[in-house]
Length: 323
Image (cartoon, rainbow, N blue to C red):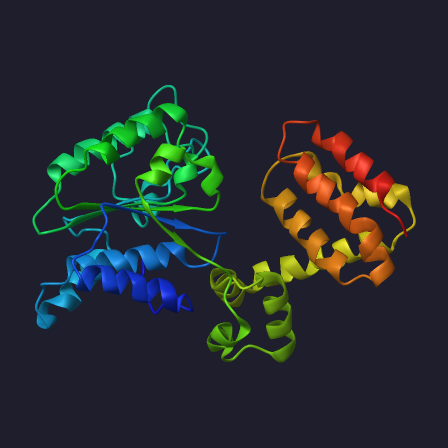
């Protein structure tokens, strides 16, 4: 079940979207762009609610809010979590964040990744035909950069001739991964990391030491703070990774460095978390070490964007680090 709740920070973005509705200047497509955990999806859902409830009597809005949170409102479509064989195959769990049909993903050949394919866009298009009872309809697609080229081209055709009253809200962490033609047909709303003052509202009841650590690793992302606050095991895991990353910069043993970097050999969350903490702990090093090793780390980050052998890159990085 999705939740509509107060947005943390992003006052300028909220005011822009409210102004668009108030002035009747709603675009047929929006692109919410920025790093993960900044609140793009909560903002998209709140914007959709504000848009679809504009002419709804106050006494009916609570019922509509319940429909939104259960994803049963007839004018709201959300494509978020995707079915993946042996990874994300619980239909009940998927239904809590997505209400676009995905049964095709479980048929041979079964989907094994969360890439958005052309069949997903076709299923979405069929639902767009069926959906509609008010002035507006809203379709939210999370992480639009997941679209394969055929899917992106099929989606582009919808954007070029949008059905009347349909408003798309796309979110992306990587705007440069989207087709320029898709970006050009959206109203881009950039999301940036928010300040400590805005984050403080989230720390009620949190120990001072945990607050400092959460702020340190959240990097201005309220969604990350919420996840760490609600999941003690996740907070504990990040503390362990942070300590491990600190030891990487302090050890003189090449063998120990290589062992610490072993999670980087494969793409995935474990690798991403270690990279994040290596970057954070590098900033905690003395000035001389920071200056010497920042270019080496930056090169590793850049190299990991390619398909080069990750283990060899990690080895080269370990050899290039100066004490």
